[in-house]
Amino acid sequence: MKICASKSYGSKTVFENFALDIKDGEILCVLGRSGSGKTTLLNILAGLTEFSGQTEGVPERVGYIFQEPRLLPNLTVAENLAYIGAANAEIDEILRKTELLGLKDKRPKELSGGEKQRVSIARAFLSDAPLLLLDEPFSSLDTALKIRLSRVFAELWQEKKRTAVFVTHDIEEAWMLAHRIVMIEDGEISAEFRLDDSALPREYGAGAELKRKVISEMLKK
Amino acid sequence: MKKTLLKNGIQAVVLLALVLGVWAIAYFAAGNELLVPAFSNCMKELLGLLTQGGFWQSVGNTLLRTLLAFGIALVLAVIFAVLACVYPKIGRGVSLLASVFRTLPTLAVALILLVWWGADDAPVAVAFLSLFPMLYTGILAALSQVDGELIEMSRVYKVPVKKRITRLYLPSAAPYALREAGSAAAFALKLVVSAEVLVNTYKSLGGMMQEARIYLDIPVLFALVCVTTVLGVAIELACGLIARAVERRVK
Image (cartoon, rainbow over the protein chains, first blue to last red):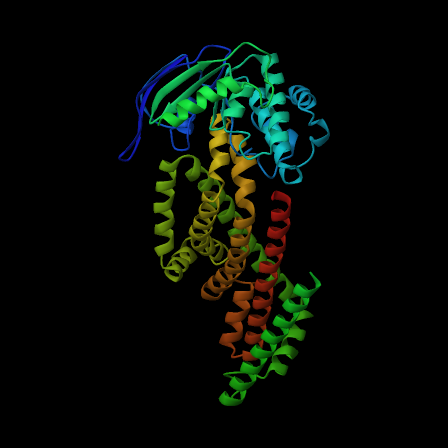
């Protein structure tokens, strides 16, 4: 799928003819500093933000893992998943895979931050959307939880092979989950890195050479 | 919890003492039973009323009218507020209608409705006309407080409108709307009784008040005002309790 977009908020231009190709079945990581337009890009893909330009092949239905889990507080875990239209059998299956089956009847206030985010990941994979969007979903979690949730995400991705656009400012998260990293700076792609085909998630803390390259790109600006 | 109950109890006793104090001062200042009757006379009349079947029938009729006016206004306010939230164009039309209702001179409308519908139904219509804009505005405000991030999530996952209304909008707005509704229900009683007084509805609290006024039975009139006040407070308290229970369930 392709996108070519321009977007401004008042006098502030976020994108000017920003073009991006997303290959089917890949996990594309968009890396950039805060305010570089990463979330705007996801919102354009999700149809939440108006923009000028065009898209090609972007599906109408997307799954979105937000920075915060965005669960309905009055519904249980299972009801939250049913809210997006999933059937009971599918819900039980995804809850088993994400090790949430025991928490199925709990409400969000009874869950930890990591458990809530796992429900959010389960919800995104439950939707039949061919495109998944992830907006820094692990940014507020500790390292151990980040690694665990990356594993959950990678296992589900392995099974469903959905195209995913993953936005983060954390090089480690990008390393663990991406097939390709694009860096955006001032509304433009400033660098692109293709990662090897090793199994996801990659080992936390490894990949020093790539990380050095990415960081040196970051420091250029 | 116990501390709050004690605090509320003390506040209620102090308030009651204050009302009785003001009553006593007014009684002695007026020095005329036709203007301000003695509290003891009122209570005697009240006890007398409580033993009469007709009194309870009047209370029942007034409460039924209150419930009817409040129920219709609440249901329509919820429907239109939800529609206004989902479809802003409808909202603009309903807001205009609510403004018109709000500016209608209630007593004049009561007299017109008395001619059209008779004394039994006019109080319901009068109360509805005042309650609907009040409830609509309150519920709309409650709905506008629904978490924008959850609305956005629902849009992304293309959750059907009906499900959004029943699972997101209504539960989120319910506690605030119920608190608003509590005050509105007590206000509904006041409106219904006022309209009953004006159109002299047969076998109603308002009708009994009008009758007491005509026969200068002031202790009975005061006793009926006391009954109406107690009923209003009871309705508001009951709605408050329901709102708190819903809030606990929703959050």
